[in-house]
Length: 371
Image (cartoon, rainbow, N blue to C red; front, side, top):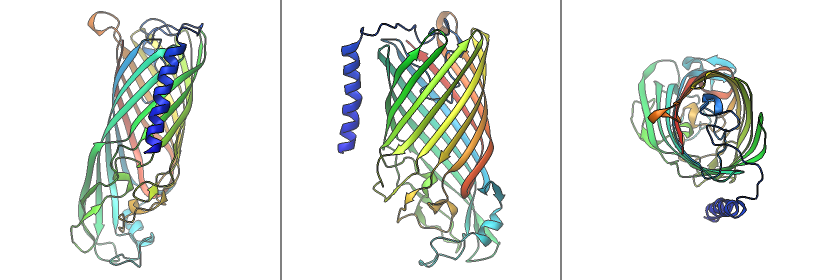
C-alpha cells in the first residue's frame, strides 16, 4: 500500500510541478501532428508497436486504442525446436516426488493466442512533460496435448485453457531532454500497477483422464502481481521524407515476490526503425526489435503440474523481431488528425529458456486522435 500511495504521490507531484513551471521553458514545440515533422504528417509518430514514442505541446490531449494479437505455436528449447514427443520423454518434471507427479512432463502446450486491447490517454501540462495513462484488457487461449499415464507417447487427448480480464495499469511521463528541427530526445519514466489477476483457474485434462480445475500456469495469468518500474529513453529524427528513431525500455520488478510468492523476470527491450513519407497522409516503416526476459524468481505453491509452463525456469529468453508498418492520417474535414496505423512482424531469432512456446507472429492495429 505504501508503494501504491508513493506512486500516485510522485505522479501528481510531477503534474503540479509542471503547471507551476509552465511558461518558463523558452522552447515552444509545435503540436503533435505538426512537431518538427510538419502539419498532419503520417510519419510524425513512430510505428504503432512503439509505446511512449512522442510528446505533446502544452495543453494537448491524445486518446488512443491499440489491438495487438500474438500467435505462438510449437515449442523451442534454447534455439532448437522440440516436439511434444521429445518433451514428454526427455524433459524432467520439476515436481516429481510429489503426489501424482510423474518423472517427466506429460502435458505439452501446442499453440497460444493472446489478444490485448490497450486504451491510452496522454496530456501535456507544459511543453517539456507529457503524462500518460494506459489500461489493457487481455484474452488468452492455450491449446494442449495430454499424454497417457506416467510415461510413453500415447496421446490421451487435447484441451484448451482460457483466461481474460484487465491487466496491469501503467502511469508515467515523458520528459523532453532535447529538440530541434531534426532531432528529438526524451526520457520515459513510468510505473506499472498490479491491477491484473494472478489467480486465474480453468479445467485441464490430466494424464489419468481426470478433469480437475487448477490454478493456471504463469503465462496464462493476466498481471505481474508486483509494482514495476518502467524506465526508458527515446530518440527520433527526420530529414525530408525520411524518418528514423530508436528506443530503449525496461521493466524492473520493484518487489521480490507478489502475494503468490513469485515475481516475473525483469525485461529489457531495444528497438530501432526507419520510415518513409510517400504522401502527407501515408508513411511506411521497417523496424527491428530485440528483447530479453529473465526467468521467474520464486514459485507459486498452487502451480504444480507436469507441464512446461508450470516451471518458473521455463520462462523468458531472447527474441529479435523484424516488423513492417503503415501509418495513415486524415488531412481534411471530419477525418483531419485522425490516425490509423498497422504493424506486422515475426521473429528472426529466438533463444528461449525452454522448453516453451515460440512466437509465430504479432499484429498491432491502432487508432489515435490528438486535440
